[in-house]
Amino acid sequence: MYLLGLDVGSSSIKAALVDMHSSGAIATSSYPSTEMPIHAVKPDWAEQDPDMWWEYASKAIQSCISQSQINSTDIKAIGISYQMHGLVVVDKDGNPLRPSIIWCDSRAIPYGDKAEAALGIENCSSNFLNSPGNFTASKLKWVKENEPALFDRIHKVMLPGDYIAYKMTGDICTTVSGLSEGVMWNFSKDTVASSLLEHYQINESLLATIKPTFSNQGQLHQKAADFLGLAVDTHVAYRAGDQPNNAMSLGVFEPGQVAGTGGTSGVVYAISDQLISDPKMRVNSFAHVNHHANAPRVGVLLCINGCGIQYGWMRKSLGDENVSYFDIEKKAAKIPIGSEGLSILSFGNGAERMLQNKSVGGQVINLNFNVHQQAHLYRAALEGIAFSFYYGIQCMSEMGVPVSEFRVGNDNLFQSSIFSKTLSTLSGSSINIVDTTGAIGAALGAGVGIGHFSTLKDAFNNQTIVNTIEPENENAPYLEAYQLWLDHLQKHISS
Picture 1 (cartoon, helix red, strand yellow):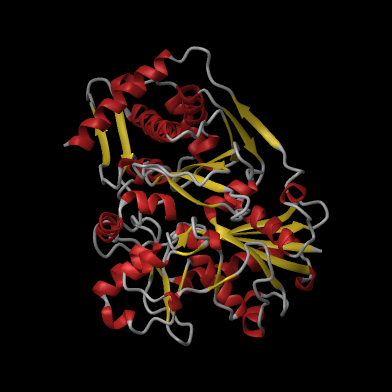
Picture 2 (picture 1 turned 90 degrees about the horizontal axis):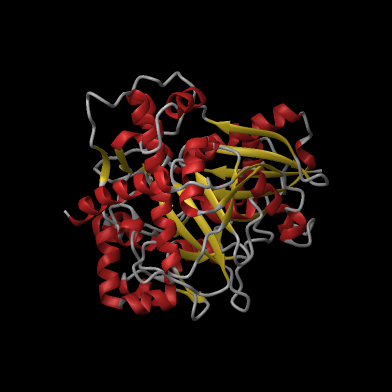
């Protein structure tokens, strides 16, 4: 018997088949092989077609089944992880009315800022744990103000994972964790964020029905089963945003535990048992997958938009698109710590929350034509991303969330020794690299949802740590390079 996990990202759709008894993956896949398109009609906009996700989910699932040669009737439950903060709006027939406004789209910031000013920062912090910012509720307000005729046709509002689950089951539902990521949940009252929706003049009836994160959230209907190559009535039993899901996948679900990711965006995600928020709103707090009003589990999220996307851009722009990241790493490793004075600010993927929603842009600073070569740019790019992680970790420390050890997946930027060692040494933290993926975690989450695993600990007790990065004893060169980078950043923030 097997569990199926989907990870609906902004770059690709990943799938994993997991054996229910060993908890091990028997097949994984990703579609497409190149990054999915993100449409930017205007600067700082970012949209994707929800039905593209659905089509590619089918291809990823069918690839897993083909690899494993299993009978699809042996798949007992499906779990869904998805890119957070996106907005999908559908009409009464369940058809998308417009492309999804996805997580890195910045157009709604002015609406969030106005709402924060009107409602008060203390009110927002104590009730929503966040400013309305650029999250899903504010994106919906943008639609209301700028596309009023379309807004009047909206039947329901969904997050990306809600839409994929709806396409599978025909049921429009969401979770508390999902609503919290859209700043549509009031933690102090344990209910929908009515005051914010009222301020935005948005009727609560547009929201989806709330179901537990781990639960029977519907069964595949015949049309969806045929399209996906699965059995009718297969249960959808879990859904969560990608960062809560990634943390769970790494075994991070109790207070004091910390997870990290280094994909298109970079994330540090720490669990607290307090309803905690950042007064400056540089980091954000959401309901974790196992949050309950009487036993809070809050995920404190530091997000850096310009992370792997910056390193990938550097690779393409320097003409090394067909060269492996491993070979690029070898080039960069020949350059000393600090890249001989070259600094790169990796903030070229929209406004950054930890910079209080300022859009600093990507910057190459102190380039010397007589000193710096291609390898310097590569090292400075990796260091710049690590420096932005450390900057964010210091923001978390200010609000009483320490980071002394964290767990990460065995992929993306954490495979870079330069990046990992720089971050570990600056933060003084051990980095444990775990052999898992978000899709595998989503599959195991579905196992919890159908009761195959009695607890989260049972579901994730067979994880393997494949490597541990420890801080260097001598951290002075790293601190010197970071201070130079920080000086440049502060000049751009204040200008």
